[in-house]
Amino acid sequence: MYDSVSGFDFIKNGGYKNAIAIIVDGIAMDLSATFPVTASVEIIAKDHPEAMNIMRHTTSHIMAHAIKELYPNVKIAIGPTIENGFYYDVLCDHQIKPDDFGTIEDKMREIICANYKITREILPTPVAIEMFMAQDEMFKVELIRELNVPEVTIYKHEDRFMDLCRGPHLPRTGVASKHFRLMKVAGAYWRGDSQREMLQRIYATSWFSRENLDQYIVNLEEAEKRDHRKIGKDMDLFHIQEEAAGSIFWHPNGYVIYRTLRNFLRKFIQRDGYVEVGTPQMIDRSLWEASGHWDKFRQNMFVAESVDDKVLAIKPMNCPGHIQIFNQSVKSYRDLPLRMAEFGICHRNEPSGALYGTMRVRAFTQDDGHIFCTPDQINTETKRFCNLLTSVYNKLGFEEFTVKFSDRPPVRAGTDAVWDKSESLLKQATTEAGLEFTVNSGEGAFYGPKLEFVLRDKLGRDWQCGTLQVDFVLPERLDAWYMGDDGEKHHPILLHRAVLGSMERFIGILLENYAGKLPLWLSPVQVVVADITNDFDRYAGVFHDKLLDNDIRAKLDTRAEKISYKIRNHVMSKVPLIAIIGAEEVRDNTITLRRLDGTQEIFGINDAVIAIKEMCRAPMP
Ligand SMILES: [Zn+2]
Ligand SMILES: [Zn+2]
Image (cartoon, rainbow, N blue to C red; front, side, top):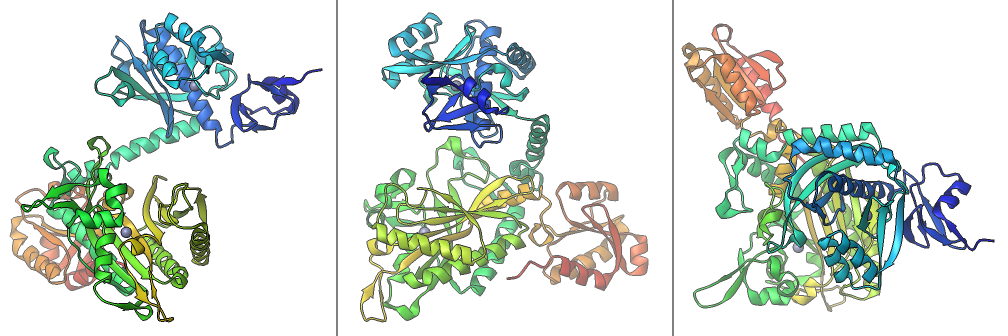
């Protein structure tokens, strides 16, 4: 008679062939775990959402094991899973280079083939410290001391390798997938502390199948080609320099995209009943104290001082400013909903290490808006916003997007009754707008629930862009009110919303999604008029002028260069249309229009202008 059972036996009896771990009484374990027969057990097979993490984490141990066998005196630090893979930080005399990756991978395959049993042991802390001390693994000793618990779990590859770990792991090294690859090595300080040891961080990816690994590598190479920083350079759109880290210098071409996108959006919000405003860049500390930002958001805010010793904050968001405009006159329920928009430039003090091209910046333009409404209007305003956002995304070429609904966080303002109501209103409206959503439990803002809109690009990458947040706190804090139809004063509900989120980031997403080949209406230069020899300069000039007269962004290229060179040049900068002019065109009063994909078509000169104008037309609401 047994009162406990091992994972192996349990799985064997259940016949689960693809099982790689189990959850026993809510705790994820590996198959070597022993547990009482009365425990509640869930099997983790390869298609379980946790399976990939367990497999990757085990592979990270295998990588550390391989490195320890290959290079003497290696000290291992930590090896967590990350998106698409894992890394391990090691201290090693040998400078690991990409040339070494093959050797490490071979050793890892050996360890997988050796099929070592992976065992989990719970040890009294002093015993564990002694064991790691004996191996001179001082990082592990430091971690254990810091944990400050009576016992710790370690995982062993038989007697070949051991690591401090909470688990769970695969039952044997042989179960780990061989479809892994080492990706890169970078420096990383132990514990992110520049006073401590500089370690080598080895990144790797792993997948359950060869196809998935190959697809990942292909996508990665494609993403590299599409890197918006590279495209930005090729197309001469923008640059960033050290002296203004996290802020964009928009070059003429890039600024055309910026303004075109803003004007496109303007048309949509105007049609949707928004009024556009502009609010100060710097506002006195006292207002940020009243709004609560000084307390909650201070470390992200840039602060400046005036000559008369006032402390001003550079705005990290536009909401308090919009409420000041709302408060300038007495409002009645008849004035609501009031939809206020601003292309507001905000600054946030992000650490320089987090900055990335136009995607992660310190200075960005929000396509921000705040809807002041009554509780009864939350439903229609939410639906209206969902429709606006769907239309804008579709017209920018993003058909696919998902919606996340974030409900009440553990620390929050407002009573449960208020949360119940606003959550159910927001959910209902989203459903009524025809959008499905998933729930991010506890991820809502301090002041109310929110929707996040995540769009999917051509490489299948997800970008969170739009947002709608219900706020029943800020209007009260900043004393915004309206006269209700009951003759009483009420605080309006504030809906914070953005469609694109940040203009800078969205332009980065567009560039990567389209690999720089933007839709014609967004292209900085829409047509280049290029002649074959200088004999046709006058004709080319006339046609160029006609295009300009029709608000087409055209450029004239009458350089004394071969036409093939000119074409190559403009194709490189992703100019969508090239109007070629030679002897035949001048004789026939035509132009030859070449598209970026290489196809050509001959147009009569007047028809060409009409056709090009039509092609360049921006989508309308
Ligand atoms: Zn582990
Ligand atoms: Zn806001």
